[in-house]
Amino acid sequence: MINFNYETEFILEQEEAIATWISSVITSENKNEGEINYIFCDDDYLHRMNVEHLGHDTLTDIISFDYCVGNELNGDVFISIERVAENAVDFNVTFNDELKRVLVHGVLHYCGYKDKTEADELLMRSKEDEKLALFHVEQ
Image 1: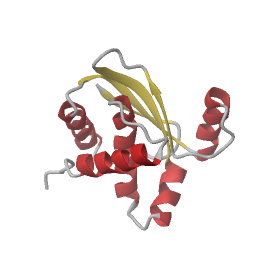
Image 2: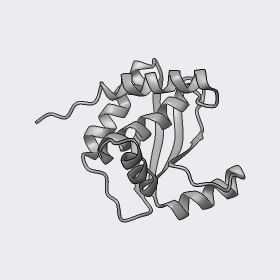
Image 3: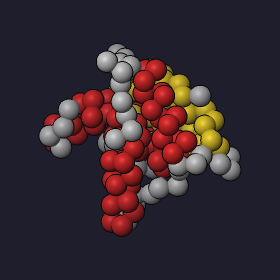
């Protein structure tokens, strides 16, 4: 089950469509969907988590905690809406496109993709692009 939680004023549009898409990403990677919680927050909230849980005194757009068991994906994905908005400007993309990239990035980590080395980062970006192409909203 995909859950959306809010620690800020932001409310995700199209929750059902996003959840269906994330589920399809999981299936496309031959994984099983467990419980994945997305928590939307601000910079201060995520910075505190970064310092307390990871020992990193930096701002970030996403932190994911992996609770996967075997092939079943479970975890908590914390997303700073402020970072997503700033990154959208920096990367010259829409807020919604950057948000979808971050949403899928978290679940791709649970699928086993990393982004610490240049080669890993290239593969992660390729996978993000592939999975972003799976997102469709009925008009």
